[in-house]
Length: 229
Image 1 (cartoon, rainbow, N blue to C red):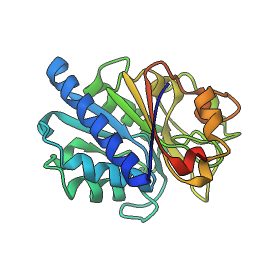
Image 2 (image 1 turned 60 degrees about the vertical axis):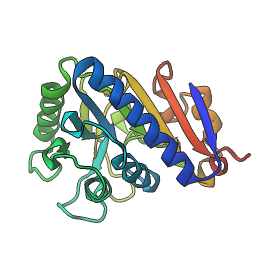
Image 3 (image 1 turned 90 degrees about the vertical axis):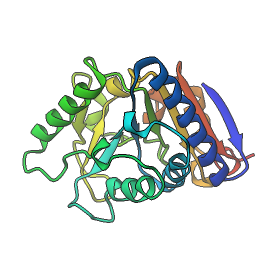
Image 4 (image 1 turned 45 degrees about the vertical axis):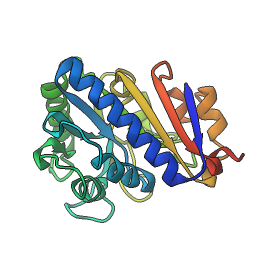
């Protein structure tokens, strides 16, 4: 996995935004489409504001969610709330091209099927996103693939529900098969709390959920606090 270490979280987020923009231009030139999925967290919202300032053909860009909390629309816990606020603040993207996970539906299993179908309608089948953005939790989780949850062993679905709650919420998430089929995987890891698990991510250590993600086509942006150097 290629790694670039930046001085600050803002610098890492800006570098990640530039990387996404470069990937978008390449995908649009080759396939007339760029479909990518975004995780939650603070640094990604900085990244998305920076991305919105890039000169891109936004009419050909589709944004999906890597994961989402089961919470009502507009709830402060929802990744979608922050995704919309950050990207729509700067990017001339059609709001209908920001595809929300349908976590408000009563039948959540059916909701995972609907999101898989939506992904396939844009990305083709099997689903192959152009880029998946991931973060890393202090416990080594990524997306909503959290330690000791049954969702870690889901290999026959592209979108699934966590088996239990995590930090008070059940989650909907892309699974390993869907993430690992992406043409590119891009990590953005910032903050000193990540120091204990950062070496495990770099080493592909399967003892943490993040270490089970494919690294062949992966790029990692981190700040110095995350690395401990």
